[in-house]
Amino acid sequence: MTDRLHFLSWFPICSRSDPNVRYHLWITSARVAKARRFQVERAAKAGPGAATLNARAEGRFLEEAAAMDQTGHTLLTRAAEAAGLTARGWTRTLRLARATADLDGSDQVRRVHVAEAVVYRRVGTLEPTA
Figure 1: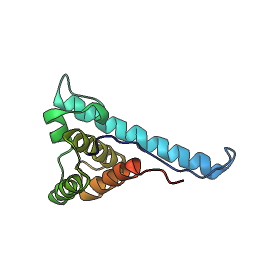
Figure 2: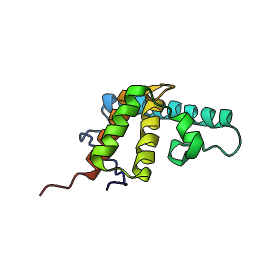
Figure 3: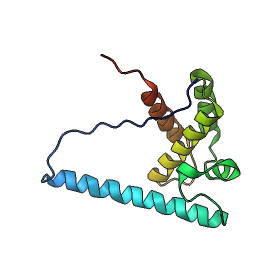
Figure 4: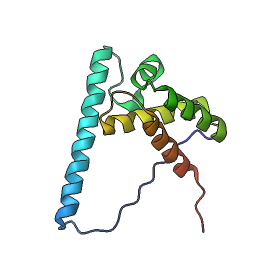
């Protein structure tokens, strides 16, 4: 069974003096800040006690915040069955899909966000090759 997520990311080696690197860092930073604002606003609407970060969302709040479209729900169900996800693994994948949707600026978790979350989970569970 799979119930852990390890996020891996590969970046090319580059120079800090490269103007393209600074521009892409600025764009990424702006996307993350905007996603965080979405999370804080969502928590404020939900009322006191709601998690301000997707990583801490749970229960009914998570279900409502990460409400998926039908194709996204079908994809997550199939992926969970194929990978043997536990309830904990399902919840972690759902949180990651919500974060991906926030980075995309989307109010709803769509199939593309679920697919990205499933891929990240899959990459995190692959055995290293020698």
